[in-house]
Length: 429
Length: 54
Image 1 (cartoon, rainbow over the protein chains, first blue to last red):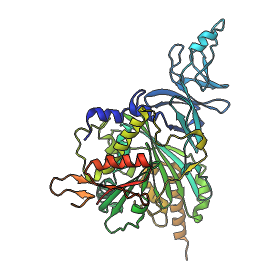
Image 2 (cartoon, rainbow over the protein chains, first blue to last red):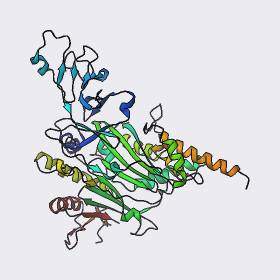
Image 3 (cartoon, rainbow over the protein chains, first blue to last red):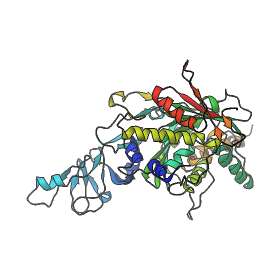
Image 4 (cartoon, rainbow over the protein chains, first blue to last red):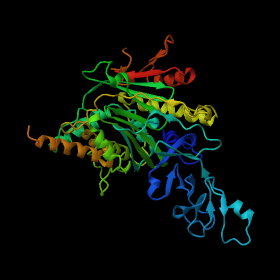
């Protein structure tokens, strides 16, 4: 149980709030790079700030305040021109620092008016298919090079990036990452109930947890679980799932490595990325070559048109429990149990980091720019994921029980593998 | 009373926190305050700390 004041302190992310100021110490992904391919100007809202992300004609990225300081029109309708973004209304031009470079119809030119017309501009960097922004004060820290950001596509390995806006506060999403036993129920027993009703193969996720543990490490927390029939030598316990503080969960298993990155849009909405790497057997490499022609970004569908949750993927099930807790979960009326110790641990760690940030003390995972080249290795399980539902000889089809159901690359690969298997079965022996 | 479990009398859950740094030997099981102690030990020493129940 949390008192409302503490809940506010941990949850809210606007400028000047404790958690908002903590988040402003980190580089945050604000879009997938490929999102700018079709339209180089994209409105984004991050930490309660309305901004416009753009790629200039010179190929440079910029992230500036959305409101034009001239007459207040939205720069989301602006267009890249030379070194910056030009407002559609009267053509005022801004660079990535937010400096106003031109005011075309101002005669005679007024350096003072131009200076007064500067807007907020934030540093932006592209890394591994994502565009990161730093919304904090002062010089930007080093951009952490997580291990999956260093991978390269090849004959058997490819990447895609799913995203969705989750209509709830970021903290309840993160708390779920410290809740091992929900897998047994939500993705196990509940999912199996729905699958059995549909006549489909159940998952292997319903095993009862007999022990849970959480390791506080230098970058965050590693979540561990031990189910009935397992020993402490099992990967579930030995390796676990790391959370890179404060907002990235790494999960995976045989054939899949992924980061779930949660970025607060504002107090009641969260931009969620599924940053996935797939690895298939050599015999499928010719098919990988085909699907790599397809887009590597996609929107993840979590709800039906009437607002109900789809419940047919692990991730839409998670979204249901995140969102139905309310726009900001009220924690004064909760009853934490022994299975919630990871949640209590994360809240305590978060409180300590908020305190440290307010006291101008070092904060977890904020790096001096000189450490930039260090790759941060996060542990990852390699076992079979136990989603069930795979078609014969098609290991990637089980991933269609996750948000990858909406991935153009993954769904195409699965269909191609099935088609080849079907064709092979028709060839007379 | 067995640590890392739930008190059979009052129903409180009692996690255990153990330092994983070789030869540190830090361990606590003080009810819900275990969590606070674990974070403080980790932040002060930079030692990895495991919190668990079974």
